[in-house]
Length: 357
Image 1 (tube, rainbow, N blue to C red):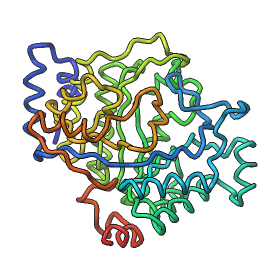
Image 2: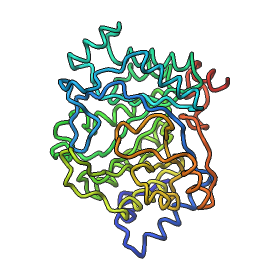
Image 3: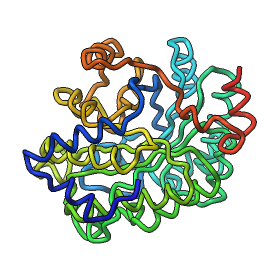
Image 4: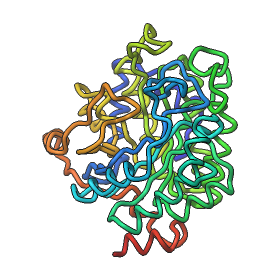
């Protein structure tokens, strides 16, 4: 849908009398009566990261004796097989960006016979496909095009949050110590995924100091990329949460009205993509996003916690079912790759073979 920056800002600045009309418009754009989710296992290969974001609790100091330098091979396989036994269909692999630049992570990788963490990830994804019914979905941070191309062979989909296009945020507490949050670098990764036709998930992190104008620019940048490549399957609208121990612990969280406006804007701007708001970050208010145009609950796990937000437990599937059906929708489990991308144009032979089986 063609919307100008002025159009998006008008939604993001809507007053109390205007918000319901945008919510209604967003709901009318959503064609399906089902709300989807992906049953997964969450596997953080390492918590070491070159970025040090002001809102993050995932990153750990590699010098800390309690730090997760590298999950060992048997430990990963145990989680994957447990997920297989519990009927999960997605193996979500994530780790701190460029973690293997750290000497301690390098040493841990060398001990198990790998040069880079991406080599290790490739093998784990391949084993997941060969030994279980799960499909890999990886979030490894900023990658080169050649690295994306390699991982495409063994991933049903991939993801990288744009978060914001604001260069100004790079000078604030949110991103000043995070070179990997440079918007230009993240945009390049998302575009390269498009050139390689990788089904992709991206989105915004709202409430980290961006202005309404910057939020509109971020949405429009994702729309520009989608218009060019058509590979984005889902837009996540994630709200900042203040947590004990983070640098931004005393910063205000975005109000519910801001999240509603942003979800409505995303749905109106992206009728061709799924729209998700993480339910575990909004346990009391998540139903309202369904009546604002959201149509996906994202990944939820019966086995593993949300390692990025460990203080926020996943809702149980029966709870999601109750919320969804109470609003007149049907809950439907999906694969990590959306159905419209299940073709040779977007998926490698190995992934297609696994899906067909």
